[in-house]
Amino acid sequence: MNYGRTYNFSAGPAMMPEPVLEEIRDEMMNYRGSGMCVMEMSHRSKVFEEIIQEAEKDLRELMNIPDNYKVLFIQGGGTVQFAMVPMNLMKNGKACYIETGAWSKKAINEAKKYGEVIIAASSKDKNFTYIPDCSDLDIPDDADYVYICENETINGTTYYNLPNTKGKILVSDQSSMFLSRPCNVSDYGLIWAGVQKNVGPAGLAIVIIREDLIREDLPAFVPTYLSYKTHADAASLYNTPNCWAIYCCGKVFKYLKKLGGLEAMNRINEEKAAVLYDFLDNSKFFKAAVVKKDRSLMNVPFVTPSKEQDADVVAASKAAGFDNLKGHKSVGGLRASIYNAMPKEGVEALVAFLKDYEAKH
Image (cartoon, rainbow, N blue to C red; front, side, top):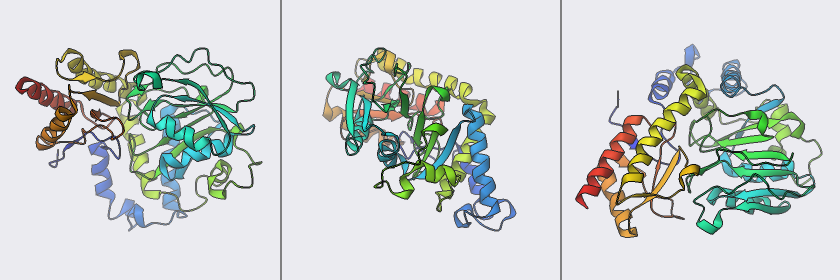
């Protein structure tokens, strides 16, 4: 059932799967006989303890997370992680970052407050339309970690090969591709994701961190809440967490498991993205912004021949019942975010609309 819902191509907060929303609706007033909505219950209650433990268990199964990694649910979304990563991992005060667009740049600027940042590779020269070759990076021996934004939400690029970190810890911001395809967790020291793009409501980040990276000897300036150890020791219940978001994410984890896991989700995402990219590659009017080999399956930026026509397409798409197709203000153009919850029919409807627009213009 559609409930008169729009196809929402927003980069986040984004669409959630309809079966999940229906289940949440059905439990809204009285969660499993508790007499309460999850939004109202104590995070110390037995009922919520079961919700958070089950969410973690399902995520561990989905991603095959090894036992020596902690799963943390931390308030503040992705932006807080830009600071938490260097605060917690910069032992020698030096880290390598790969600059591939708007979100890696934000992470770089934040990390500079806590130590020396080395840009080990960058795609700035071509306006962040590709992923640089990271097979032989120049990484100093005393670098604490190598950081990537694995899928650039604004610029629409993604890594299909992880960097050769020369034995250094790999840290990845997976926000906009989290749970969209299989992931070998042991390739990373730390994975984090703001959940509002591909998993749940805003205000929560999931952090998957190898236990040996959780430090006790943090600098005195690090606030208690911004220490990974604080959250690991308290099983993400140090203070009142974002209970509602955790509950919603838990529902999405179950939905993905039912679907057949991340391999199945990846197949669906590849098919869905192909519909849009095939159209863009054959269009005389619209053009995909990213080189073929590095294209994101989640965020698809594209342009028309002029800024005026970009704006006209956005206005026409809104009138046709599509939402949030305007490109990010920093890059302009158009962008369709087609996360896990976007049905293939939504992408097909968008392509039909774009074909029609092209024929008329």
